[in-house]
Image (cartoon, rainbow over all chains, first blue to last red; front, top):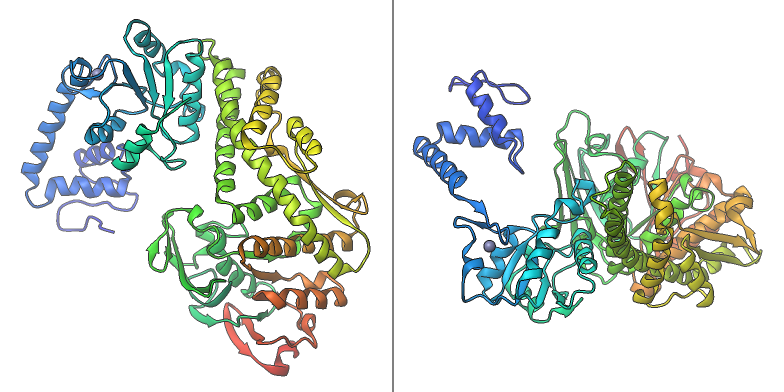
Length: 216
Length: 394
Ligand SMILES: [Zn+2]
């Protein structure tokens, strides 16, 4: 466990606050990041301010964050993370317009694109039903999904959600939403471990799950 | 399986020490509060991934220390010897290792070291709330079938979500009129996992009953037949259980029936704002010659039945998986008469490694099982005792 020590004009450590309000603000801001407690946030902050090559790194980080804030957006059609809107996958002429794959998070698109076996397009829900986390049907873009299916040439909707109870329930909800729709509804073959997150499934498993996808 | 040795560091009041155990019977003598139960708790922690007394890390770590560490050498029933380790620190960190390899979660622990604790609370298995019987059956079935554990975990998770949703709906967060459809989706998911849980519980009741009967007769003599049966709350499950003679139909069929029942009670659930039925309300009946021991058993009858249940769980585990749990008797013999005490001691030590914590040396007077090892525990320190000194008292 590293902790700030004397000699750098800073005080603080366990529970206390730094004498520098600017540093205190930086630490608090960093500690709001996912997975970063106050201790780790302090370590990151001190690294950016006092570590070797700190100045260049901090400037680079500031610039990168600014650029990303300006340029990165979510695709208005599929919800992926992109710079051009609509994204390259949505506008590509070489993607199969008859297949639409529903995923929970923009991160889930990455392993599938990396493996390269899926030639259709995506629809990112941005979450899974989870009343405990305040996520209800009205919070997810189901209406937009229905619109997309209404006027598009999609003939197969592939549901590729995590094998968690939230993923399964969201899939069941979509199935009910589409009851009566002539569209073919499929889901990934089990091959994804129970409770497994799609983003962390290896490519081979993912490709197999896709290949052997089954009717809902 | 057997715990061959334990090295303890900063566990409660126990002095840093390494103890080599007898593969047969280990006796811990000493007044209450000196550390006997703390040792059982340390040995048992790895089996459950938590304290069997429900203590948090802060309580388990010795006063003035930041972290504790316990290393066990365990001989599995296959004969393989594995090193089990766990460490806890005050900031909530926990490290589990098996032969030096880190384990991710509790699920990885199941079946590595299996233990059974008898203590004065064990009588609650018969007399206590249904939750204690469900926990007993769930633990027993999880040891046999990893899929059961997955269904059980999923069931609990969905139930929390469903409860949250019903709560929302009752408070008027309808979700644009979609509340009912959301509930249907959660009910379908719940029905699937509930079917897995109910099937597992029914199967376990059937596996346990003959062993429970045999153990009961060995302890109490031919006093009558003990029945152990599954009493599901869901009517659809009860109906199938009766028509199937104690067996339930395949998962998909049962899930369909359970979903229909959930669907039927949805309006009442929405009105009341909470789940009204499901495996979370299940119970198990224990009867002697048709008399319900949960409510009408005498002190002695319930105690004997509870012990027979626990020994039965060990026999089921052995019958299905060829595994024998390590048995812990914590201050239990003071509650039994001498004849039953001796029978229990002899029955359990025949096939198991046993740890006995006792404040009364006369609990074991005249009993000299093979490979007996004894310690006197005082202020967290262990002193080996031998021969007549064991029953010399203090
Ligand atoms: Zn797009």
